Image (cartoon, rainbow, N blue to C red; front, side, top):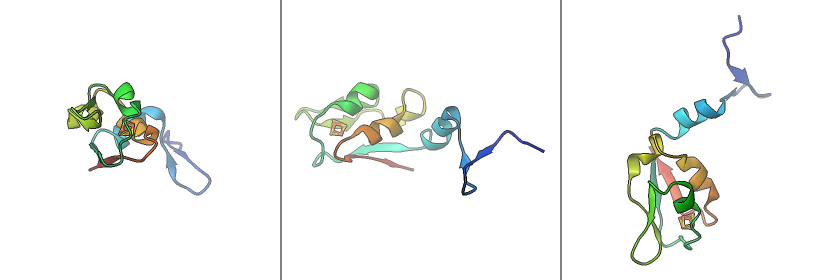
Length: 89
Ligand code: SF4
């Protein structure tokens, strides 16, 4: 019987967008490595309630729990050109 799940060609379950957000983002805590940040602004533009500028013009996390409700921090991390953002459980 079909239970609504979708699988890819190697048998991994494929999540829809809503499932991805609830599975991959809600429990993750973002961190910024300021040594790697080049101040491009992608994360601040995508998640302004989570990422802000510090006094030196580098991104920092102001609200680590904001990923669960206010934005998609996974997308912010993927948009970072220097991989300065990590998402930790
Ligand atoms: S996306 Fe990356 S490089 Fe750009 S401001 Fe954010 S942390 Fe810095």
